[in-house]
Length: 158
Image (cartoon, rainbow, N blue to C red; front, side):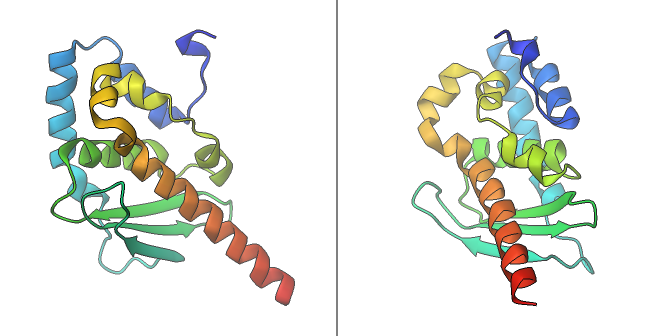
């Protein structure tokens, strides 16, 4: 399967396409810029969320909060808040996920494969950072699935 035949949500695909022609040094510079933009992923005053989970796992250097809201069409809108010790690469990938997945239907989010990460940051950084580069994607997908499961359970009680 060639790289163009992989399917990602449109906004995430656009980000992958931006990174494709970049050299390693250009990728790193762009990732640093994206890491500093992570504040754009934070909760906004007055917004409410259907699901909230803040925790620190072994795979991450600090707490990560995932806040999720689903609309009537099962489109997911989320915010992510990172503790101050979260590494630069994780911050950059968080920004990418917020930009690439917000507004997607839950099935699209759950279907995202981790292979987009190497296409954005390059195999060398993935190798150096091991599994930590996938952490926020896994947390977002788990939050979506857990919230869906809770909705199904609540509906069956009624």
